[in-house]
Image 1 (cartoon, one colour):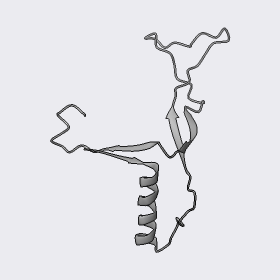
Image 2 (cartoon, rainbow, N blue to C red):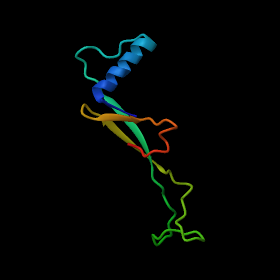
Image 3 (tube, rainbow, N blue to C red):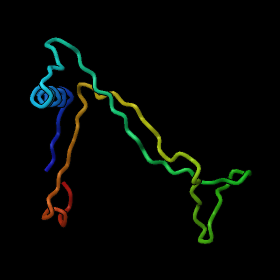
Length: 99
C-alpha cells in the first residue's frame, strides 16, 4: 500500500494531531506554513595515499576511513507541490514485487 500526501495535507494532519493529542492550535487561518526537512545521506569516504590513489586492502577493495564523517546532512524545504510517500508492506506482500 502506498500513501501519498501533498504539503498542505501533511500540514492538515500535523494540525489535527496537535489539536487532538496536544490540545493546541498550531495553524491559524490565512497563515503561511513551512515544513523543513533535515535528511542524512550516507556517503562513504575512503582512505587515500598522498598521491591521491585509494588505499586498498588484501582483496583489492578501497579501505573506509574510520575517522571521517560518512553522513552528509541536507536541509530541504517541503514545498506546496512536493509529496510525501509512505510505502507499507505486509508479510504476504514481501514475497511479491514492490509496486
